[in-house]
Image (cartoon, rainbow, N blue to C red; front, side):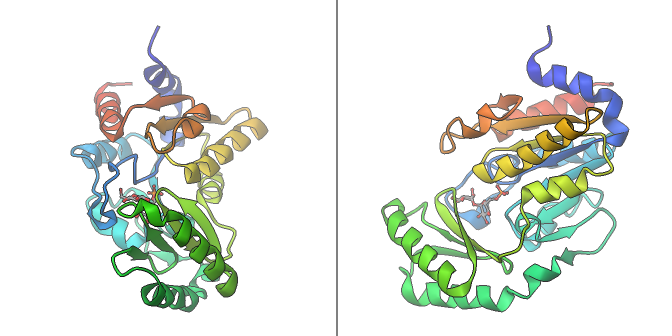
Length: 262
Ligand SMILES: O=P(O)(O)OC[C@H]1O[C@H](O[C@H]2O[C@H](CO)[C@@H](O)[C@H](O)[C@H]2O)[C@H](O)[C@@H](O)[C@@H]1O
């Protein structure tokens, strides 16, 4: 019997021209690193996505990163859709970048949070200003987690922003109903099957969107894949169809399947 990843791939083969593969970035295409701006895809995975985009109808990256970060990294993949800031901005294949209008009006408020964080929080904290969202990273200072969490909750209430705990970080979002789940719900409307590769709790919204689509539509095939990371424990794996050990294992899987005639 084929191992689970290859069995799912073989079963998905008839839907290649009408299905999609959607990938998270950090922890999935790129290994986790202490310095957020330094994260880059593992060697060979961009070429594997290029090969995939010639075989599958939709290939997309769905990330908490802003488009400004994703665009240069995937510059050689114009046929891959990029969804940034948890779906609050996107650049679909062959089109220009679009910002969700309800999110755009919150940009000045997010600027005010960045300014306040620079004034009030320790100077060596990594403040990632992503224009439509803001992340405060404490990976290099884990003892500050509780203080930063409390500061973020108070600032979120004061400015009317949503606040979520992320991986060794807290993030501020406009109060707009947009996340990886709504991206998957919208982008799979015209597809008859989709895969999502994720490693973090925010990726569970995407898994749920695929599960909910396939339970409403038995003709739709969903495949949820976890990329293991010790920081997230088993929460993502337990909701997935199978787990790959690392971004490198994902790269190896994609290289193998894109080179095997279906
Ligand atoms: O949706 P994703 O593509 O997974 O992005 C989620 C956040 O990832 C980044 O932060 C995480 O990765 C960093 C680099 O490995 C790491 O240093 C940090 O501790 C992690 O939280 C990114 O910086 C955020 O903007 C993304 O929202």
